[in-house]
Image 1 (cartoon, rainbow, N blue to C red):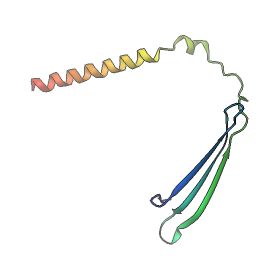
Image 2: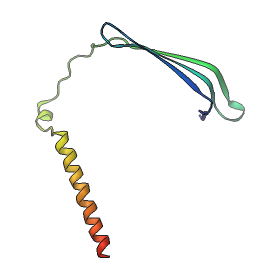
Image 3: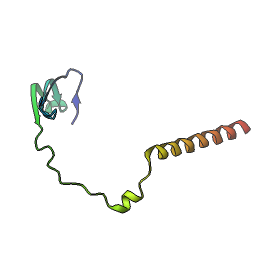
Length: 100
């Protein structure tokens, strides 16, 4: 559906635990939101949404298979190689354009 975002204002409130610095919740209040088109439009004068964060540190340990660990590459090396490839392609392209 189409949404008119022009007149919407959104107020955010974040709550963070002083004890462990984990987020507790986020509240959002939307004002002036319209959705739909033609005769099928809905306008909300105020729309509240609250997301609560719970169950921190409840994920079981994640084990990366050894073959994946062994085949890992340094991201810095990868990015440098990628930059070098791009530079070489640009230089080759510039040389070709100069010769033409």
